[in-house]
Length: 305
Ligand code: PEP
Ligand code: MN
Image (cartoon, rainbow, N blue to C red):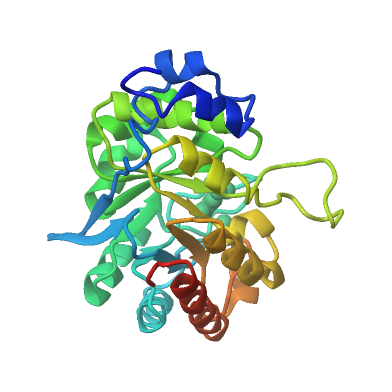
């Protein structure tokens, strides 16, 4: 055992082959817990208001909003409803990693401006994706937290850039990469001098699932496994991991039960009409129902919503 590990004996008994004792010592020493009580609480500002939200403490942080920003009117209504039901942050994509390049519903900088306006109006810090090193400055001007999408988890120059930029980072796990790779990606941000990193499980690709149309499946197990190794907060995305609104609430409840520090959920006015990912968004009403259920679960596991 060395000072900066949680004990090799425990790692071995945990039974994970993915992360070795050598990794803990040589490769992952910034993201690995120094002891069992070691946890980082990531503080997020809301525009000029400081420390509005803390991620990784007793209180769960639910981020809600559209997959892609559409109109100001709709985003304002969504922010209002998200706030009403207890969301602590506003999500929304202006720069979208689309599977096919032929549609671009996002309004880019206009989308960022609308997000900022809605976030400020409702006191909800804004999390939004940055896809490219050339956009960090621009997205960082409007966002309170920079999201690294699943597909960019191993874009090391982007990780370094957001690390140096300094605003909190939401690091999504790639759909095909391991916990070791994910922590390795976090290590790049930490090494660049930014300790405000939150990990997000967003579903993995597996060959056999319950449904031939399923793209991803939420790796609920990775939540306690990640929290066993790292001091960083871990949240989950039940929307992108299920791609199916009927499965969002059950997986949201499962993720919180498994120890997630929060969730990021697609919520919009008319989810079926969303220009991106119309199968997975929740209506305001369904989101409200889910939040009441999560409140009960939070109480049962000694946390707050
Ligand atoms: C998103 O949250 O908008 C998104 C594109 O997610 P992911 O990177 O997990 O696919
Ligand atoms: Mn999406």
